[in-house]
Image (cartoon, rainbow, N blue to C red; front, side):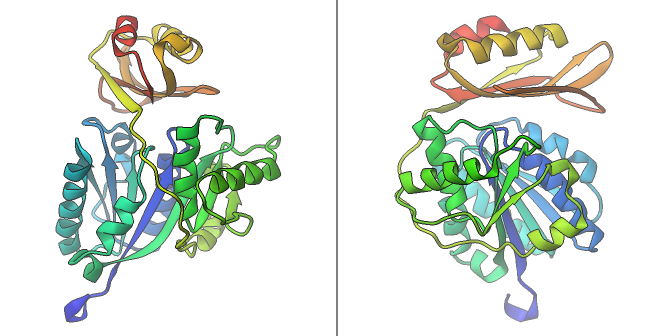
Length: 307
């Protein structure tokens, strides 16, 4: 940076819907804070309600700030993203972590940072791609999103990794996905597999040097993904489990990929996080009365009747 100021390192954490980006970022941020760094986490999402930002709230301190960018159309979102980074550049952070939507065009990140004045203030540190080991890549849109995020990452981190996970099968699946978008990159040398909740300082001493990659691939448009927001609904655990079960098992509602949010019941807040193969409902200290349904070609009218 001009005038003797040091460049701000900026990390991007990509990952398809429900892969575990927020879980990873919480652990990563705690590691950076233990190193005495001043950091900021920027949530760059499409929707007007960002559940993940609320889940990061316990990190807030004089050394850690949370910011958010929301937008409608692509041009508006990119403009707001650049404006936010310019404003943040004045705050002298040591490191900035970007968590985008689960359906993200990685070129939005690179293009913004190669333009002035951001190219004079920020330098790319690491690009991580979190990949759910259980994710089905048969859908072409999902395969494209995952492959495009993996293509330029410096490290592919396998989430929901357990004793029965076959790492070779995952590597083959991702290599095939990369090939489907015209990318000849192989991921053998950049894959990292461990339960995200068990990452420790020794892991992050390795991950902090992941960097990023200049791999190219054939781009195509993705516009079928939709987010539906249901606010201030009368929900308890039995009702939300029933709704989740219906949405994931009845194709007439559309291809539902993820359900997340909060509800208030019996004087307590609860967090909901569900994918097709996993449902987590846990008590938390605070929340916002909203459930978000994310998927492809969703039947909004029919889903609304469930709530």
